[in-house]
Length: 303
Length: 271
Image 1 (cartoon, helix red, strand yellow):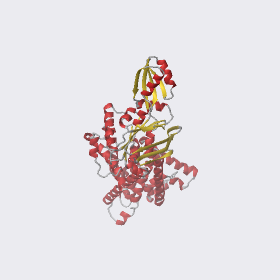
Image 2: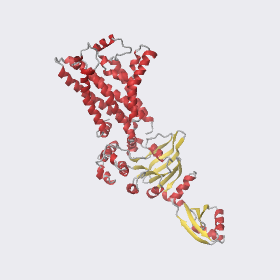
Image 3: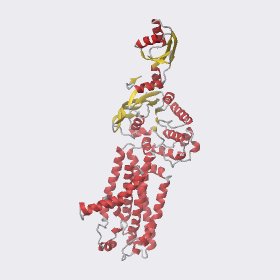
Image 4: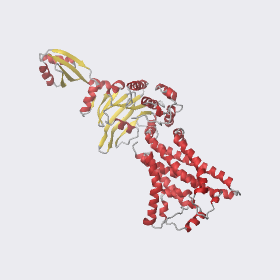
């Protein structure tokens, strides 16, 4: 796998506030890499630093294995925070500016506008566009010059459900072309649906990183019930493979378990203590539970 | 360089304030010039008709342009940079693949192009009005004061560079324009007065302030005949324009400083 982006020890302070704190990340070719974190966790600041619009206080980064950063940026399409265009110019004129900066010879502007479904409004000035249209124009602009990598920062922010679906669909289609995509989001569902890899950050620190599948699978939740729930709870809490036991209502327990072990282990454990389980269900752990859990405890995890 | 100029042109050609400013400049330059005939408070002994013929027309058309360049080209320079921040297109341009240096460099080249265009227009107007008004055309009289052509260009570019730096620093159109006007019309004259009366009494140092140097590149105080009439009146404060070469020298120095500061400010700022 060819490296696309490497970040080492990147930090940024605003006064006493630490926005990004010694962040390490690496993104490889073909990944759809989600940077997941609550609002204000440093996602945009991080992407701003690797795009040279925010100056880091410490740390380094390199693109495509270490080529000149300005040349690198010409091979990257970026949508950071908001779609930024000249409001008095129409869609075509705005894309021409982008193509001129990227020195793209004969850009397929009509094709790109077709792709984002803006072809009919291409002659209208940007300031007349709806937010969804602006966002889609920004995605078209990011695609000018057939870039190797794309950065989408909160691409569905502020859109209505239809707009969200359109933009997500567009990103999935771009990912299918084999482009490397780095996407920042605070919405788990979005990362789960679109991304192949994820880094979870909080207060500028990396909490976990790995493939979306690995993070989803790593800890499993099992629901159990028995006649004597208190006795069951007692032996489960005593077992060192089980990290947490919680009551669900009055008649069930939910337990978190290392993913090397499964329902058979629980069944055997109960059997050894002469407890008959009346209910035993494995629950696939959703990234959401994981995300909330990870962002609560600050110790970094490696999957 | 051409690539950067083309980029600015792509951005500006559809920008209505740009067209309005340039159109107003073109309309107002001959009108301001003609207004000297009626409204200007010249000494009574001064022969006003002599302003409209060669060679004096070079200076007086230029002085009309001095005001217009200060106001219109200055505002244009502020808009040129501030809107890139208000639209957030400055950060987008950088992310798209420009370096900060290219970004500022492109603006500088565009401002130079606008200054050159204004100078060409000024030259054309002088020639047209001059040949129309002068009864006896003597070629030597026509070309005698042509040194005002490069000085006009330097003046226009100087105002733009100063306004641009303020826009880059303040990043708000209204505030930047306010500061630009306040500094030039109120603050610098006050500083000069203070310098002349208190800090370095009666010395020429008060004339070397940046906007004064740029203004004096093309200033009717340079007219020796007028100067002779004016100095007979007892004026409290230096009303002389800097000698041409001093104005050029100091203006060039200040323009270089404004350009350097613009690059420096852009290089160290988050966008």
